[in-house]
Length: 151
Image (cartoon, rainbow, N blue to C red; front, side, top):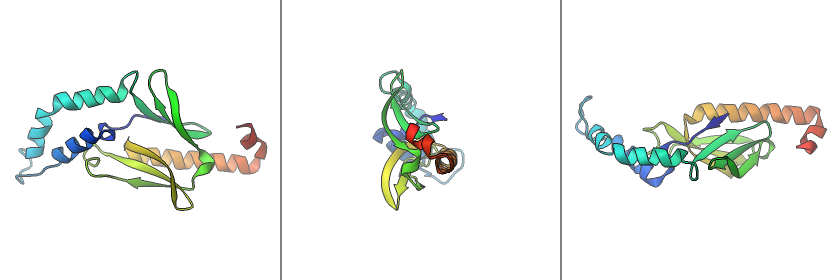
């Protein structure tokens, strides 16, 4: 499975998310955040295109052995974590990510952060895929220890 991060992966994208979430005045139709969203369409489009551009694009991929951060086209792995190298994944929604909806996935081994995926779009779904894939990989490695060595 592959997901592309939200534009909240960039600091200016997080700032836009905070601005879009402004609820003043308290009406449902006309809010300051809606006005900011309309006025910032060009900048948000630039951030979106940067996120998927051939040289700067970022995506997160789960394989049957690891979770990768890939950059550019063609995809080149810039960092990765093996499925057996973490035991929990926390979801952290930073300021400016909630509006998109996005969040950081923090991979932990014995309570210590070992890897982070920033601004994952629809993070809970991707978190569940990572956990289920890890569970399957660990079970296979337990039954067939040679598969882990082949890896």
